[in-house]
Image (cartoon, rainbow over the protein chains, first blue to last red):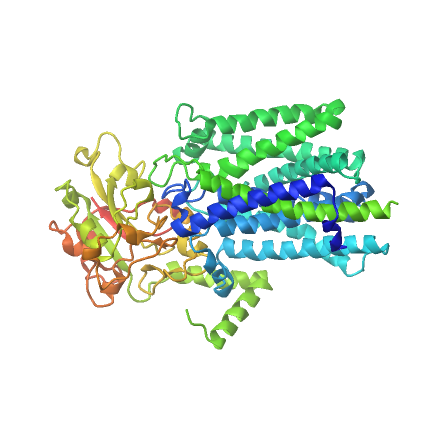
Length: 384
Length: 256
């Protein structure tokens, strides 16, 4: 089955070539980072986590979102998702690999990473996050590969895989909850110190993840022989509509509590994120771009006639971009602003930092391209 | 770091215990927290900073120089990437919201000393994924430079901004001629901070900063010993601690 990755169109090889070049560029800048230290990034004493950890957080969400296709298909027997369930699981695989890479490139002493396993620390959410993410990776890889192999051979999947699939459902929720606990339990970081942080993460995950899946389905339909069809897309569109509404609702809840209570420390980060106009260091323009994309997406999603074709694709892109800015940058960086001494330091990703991030993205897409290629080839054969 | 087979088995057993039972997780973390803020057993090292004595000489940095020189803390020009074990900033920044516009006119805009609070309930220790930062029996929060993976989770967890990360190679900023031979230098990619001069406390000495202060504004001693300098100072004065509402229980007091 794996030999399918060696047979592809010119476009397929070109994609791998471009991604390979991006990976190589990322490695080049990463080597510079290893020799000079994290000083090559835009991070500082005050903003001690930046794009890497923010992107890690975002992609844990994308990984967890596989549950939005796995759960309806396996628990509610929603047949329309049959064609895309494996795509969801493979998306989870490449996302978790990206997460682990983002953690790795963020470490000051990357070659000591195994200390996390050698000196297990049960009071640290980061220890638990490493454990649950790794198990989630294995679960999705085993499930996706086994089910696809069965399809390839024209046999039903082995019975032992079913319990693993059922386990993967709460496990998906757990990885993002633990990721939220990384933030939600820290005294003195008021943007993060909120009981609904985990709920926010899940809502934004279950909107941005399926949005990416829709975009990928459109790519598959256009450039490969494999067509997932319209029905699963429309169902995904509905999931996005409700999850994304919840996401925006949760942000408004945070705004209400912070501003109506009037507690300065609770207000400070949100004020800086959304009303920091005129300060060159603030992320305010990006946050409002995110909100405008959100408004456009909600308009499209709540208009039934636009819930398909171009409308759905545009809405999906808008949802993905909106969450990417809000969660993949604003939430993490915003939590450090102001810092414990109430300074409001600037953070901007540097060139090396951006290329390393792009390299991790390219690695994820490369793996995804190979896994989707195998899936498409198997599907094309079985439909003959 | 050497690890014997027995150590490994102990660790594996502990991890197994935690992995396979939510209840056992409660027991493990519960007892760890109890030991942190429960009944004092033995010494608890603490510091009292006399704010008014300290402000007498606004330009004085003797304590800072003594500490940073004695511990090979590099002088990094870029303030955003500086390493600071002890430093000065305004009282208003150290304790936001404590000062009002009317009382204590002499302290408005005045600087005080900032350092690691050596919390009895330290969030940094709680979040560290490798046990690279831990609390000694006498309450001093330590750093293991060889175990730290540089994830900077402790920096996100510290509500005082007391931790510094080596963004680049710190040795480049050390003056080769005046490197202290009796204290290690550090490498890039790890976190460091004030350790209450634990290496001196073990020899029965006080911290370098306290010894360097001409105004005797830095008092150091055992919080659990009623006769200690810190306890005597606290008994007769009003003292503040930074962000006490967070439940970290700092061991650094600011005498008014």
